[in-house]
Length: 266
Ligand code: SAH
Image (cartoon, rainbow, N blue to C red):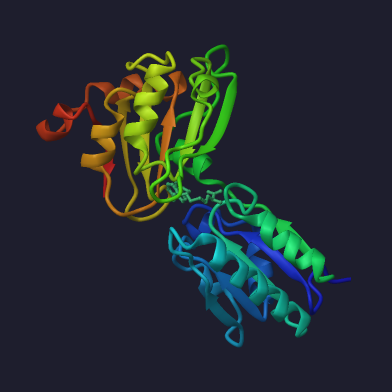
C-alpha cells in the first residue's frame, strides 16, 4: 500500500540547503507529488526532483506579514488535498523546528485531510557540521537549546535570558542575525562571560557558506560586519571553541580587528 494516496499531505523537511542532505524519503515524496508548496529556503536542485507534470507553488513569507500569509498557505494546502492532489509542503530544515508546522497540521486535521511529517536535517546540525564542531560536549555542554530570536517588528525579544545564560549549554539561535546585539547584551547581563565562544554560520551546506568564530562579547560586531544576506545561525557555548588546528591560521586584518576568525569564505 502506498503511503502517499491522492488527497494526502506530506510536510517534508528540505534540509539546510545542500540537496544531498535531503532524506531518501523526502526525495521520493517530492517525486510522487502532484503539487509542491515550497518557501524561499529550499536549496538549489531540490525542486527539480518533482515530476515534470507537478505544479510548483512558491508560498514564501515576508517577515512582518506572517499570520495572514500563514492562513493563506493553510487554506491552499487544504484545498489542494480536498481536490484530490498529492500534496508536498516543503520547508527548509526540519519542518517541526521553527517551521510553523502546527498551523498546517491543525488546518489539515480540522478539514479531515491526512497529513504526515517527513523530518529533515535542521540548520543547527548543518551549521555545526560546517565548523566541524559537536553541539554537545561531554561534561561541558550537556544541554542543547534551540531558540528563535525573531521578534515582531518594533517589539523586544521575549526570552528568559536567565535560563538561556547557562554556561553548560550550547545555544543554537535561529533567525538571530538582527537580534545579535540584544542576544549578546542580555546573555552577558544574565551572567554568561563575554569570552564565551560563539560561531556564526551563514548559508550552511550551500555554495555561499561562510562561518566565523568569535566570542559572545564580539558577536554583534561580527554579525554586522561579516555576514551577507543568507540565512544565518548563531551558536554560543563552550563547545564552540575554535579548534586548535585553525587557531594559528593567518587571518585578514580587518576581520581579526572585529574579533573574527574566518573558516571559509566562498
Ligand atoms: N525549519 C528550519 C528553520 C526555519 S527558521 C530548520 O529546521 O532549519 C529559519 C532560520 O533557520 C534562518 O533564519 C536561519 O537562522 C536558520 N537557517 C536555515 N537554513 C540555514 C542555513 N543553510 N544556514 C544557516 N542558518 C540557516
